[in-house]
Length: 144
Image: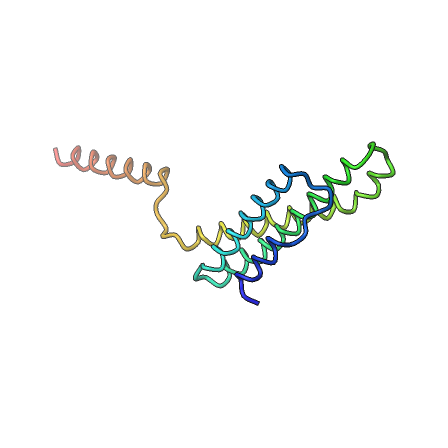
């Protein structure tokens, strides 16, 4: 299955029941951004970054679905302890997915940073400049 048909399938996937027009728009916008992220990830040359982004976008789609399902359940009736007890596993799963998305995003950011050329940070540069100026001053003093 290619990316284009996979994206089309996800866009046409059924939304959770009882979604209002505004909620459907919000869902579509979020899903579109996740699919954009997946497409841009798969375009990356580095295989690790490409796969991390692709896997992460899959986790984001699941988290989006869970988020909307939890929200619908909360809105579907009067809040009570029994309803909360029924949705706690979904909330826990959503939280674990969100944490994993964050971990993969941090790995991606570190991979990007690791590829950047190393440069002297501003603190080290200031110290180097101060040492150079100090060295020049000392040599001028000893020359006199």
